[in-house]
Image (cartoon, rainbow, N blue to C red; front, side):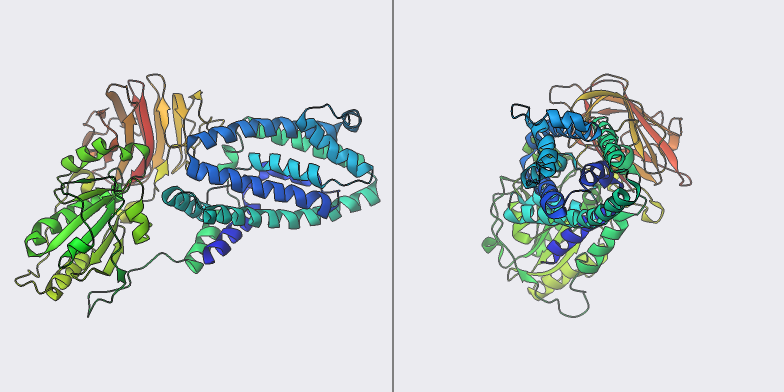
Length: 575
């Protein structure tokens, strides 16, 4: 129930976000009509359409995105026609005849029926449907939580209801603004006699909004400007009503029982072991580690998990890595096998491509560690990196409870290298940044991203934590693919380390690249996957460490240029 309240409140906050600006002209164009018969149906249609399209996009994959693309084109045509009828009332009168195209019939019908004293509910509802196809709200923490849950846990009525609650919140705030706007509109008509000019002004505003959306400016400039800081407001709501799960236990004293260990069924394959079961593990202390191989946070925790598996395996500890993919290429079992070999993982790994084990544990994080005693009970958990000493003390305590003798009370000494080395979090000011349009933020290439089609970009001038593309790219939902050699990515960052998840098209050869920092080769600040001249090669789909600065940390401009086409860029991470 709390999540539904959060979704609704997150939607309410949309009114103070610039992402709502493109649809405001369509809403306020009906401010002089009766709210119940005109404004309310429009808002209901808008909210319902957004919830339906967002549900499809969350659980249906790329085909839904393409469907929404065509829907946006149809909606643009419809609402452009609506704007023209507001601008030229005489044209609306001539468009009352029944054999006109659907978009024209909708907008004209609303005007014609209301002037004749008839109802306008259905036309307004359909105009709301069209507006809902255009609305792409900011993916703040609340909406991000809903969409992530939908992507991980599959289609459900709950997902659709959460999205509907979010859209209803936005519609509520718009309705209040519309009611106030309607009174202002009526007062202007009575006192100034400028109703017709106001009507034409609204028509012009609608046409301008259509042009803005058609040119992609609504997802470019507007999504980069946040005058009201809605993301921080939404995050505050999450922290207040749904705080991040904290460890329920500490090693001092006896560990409480959190839950029973759920089944391990549903994995599509097992590596390094035959399939394991919860029942077959009774009598063993079990550590379940949820991870995915391109996740930098997972990579930095793996040296400790690997060391625990080696140290305590003869004393009754069984470590199980549950590989739950974030990107599509991580569903490829051959890719996971290679990653397991490259990382030196010898303990059992369950390939949880369908998130069956993930859902059974009720998990939400990468990495996540669950500590299970010899009786099959979850006694401790930890989410994210860090607190490795405490986690190892939990292992020692559970082994002692199980009657294991000779358990060392010393802690493992781990000296990870490369991407596995611990982050310098005290001087990391750059966040994880996705390149695909589904979750991309702070993109500054002029004109914004063109979704799913080849386009030639210029990088622009990014500020801190902003980035841009240069060259001929196709920006897809999950990644951007380079179509011609010579293209690149520019990112202004503040961190010791910079990583980029990269791959190549299925039939592409290795892709060579060169990086620079502030326009110069990295020298001693090169990463594990580059040399001092900044040269490197994309040979597989994985995370690449491109920068590890050796000197003072400050704001730096990173650029990577690819000498071959076919590279796919997924996400930046820092440390």
